[in-house]
Length: 301
Image (tube, rainbow, N blue to C red; front, side, top):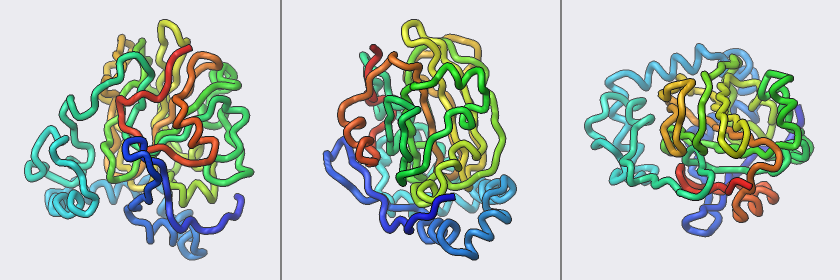
């Protein structure tokens, strides 16, 4: 594991404000302790990374008494309740609020493009084989371990990839970025490390160590698109809500994450798509771009 200095602040480019912003990190002190302090690292590998810890925390967020956290969370992180499909006081628990639905008009789907699968901070790469670390130079990306299927991963040599990182403050339902025919979802079990830059700057391989799911989307013109959901510390579960082995439409809900930060990854066969200029430019400088589900991430070639 490569050593790196602690992450003091996390900055990203906001596509809508057109400026750099500093992330309000939920549980920042805990993350820095767990991934930067020797005692924290001991706790991390002893129990924090284990599913039982996240299940315990997720169960706390399912309890009726946890709904008292909803109003302060909305206030502290300045969430727009006008987007919510239901009023904040109607949520029975914090978790129910966490994976809330939004009004359809809150996330319009870009018509003539490939769309982001989730709200979040995004990094895009046109060639997986040439990725030289996401959050720190020198850490190489391993597509074979990520997919955990050598025959399938061989098809994606030189493929394009986008990593969408969701924070606890984000809308936590994920959607299909393209139309096509979606397979059953395959579960790849693993531990639950954080996927915050605070953690990934220490060890990028958390992405392919963590519990994750993979779905194949057969498209009319882009071949087979892979969509993955990556679990993380305090993510109680990855729930799939779509009907497998059926036709799906771009922007259709695929599922949701229960409590915690997490990530989605979409992988495209080589030469089938082109990312938008802003996300490519920012990603080349290791800068994440904030954009919402349904907005354009690029176009099919």
